[in-house]
Image (cartoon, rainbow, N blue to C red; front, side):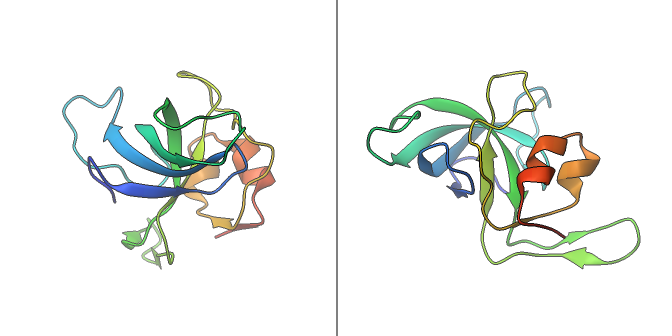
Length: 124
């Protein structure tokens, strides 16, 4: 669960390292992003000579959150860090990078991001 100006680690090899949340598209005036949802962000830290530069505005999907989330079966899921995967374009569900590091929540696959789920090391 993140809000505006939250800093998120990038969990892929697109070149971004840290992304700051600046908005939640297509959700009216909602202020919070949950696991498996898209958000707009600005790249605060990137590797040099990468596909993504500092200051670039990107769309990303949240794949890990520190705040626990209750699932329909009554269980809770929680991770050690907040992490996201950068998406190819504004309306795309394809990741920009070719690798996804670390585990991701199964809400990613439930929301239709099958490519990200298949690239992930582990699905929780």
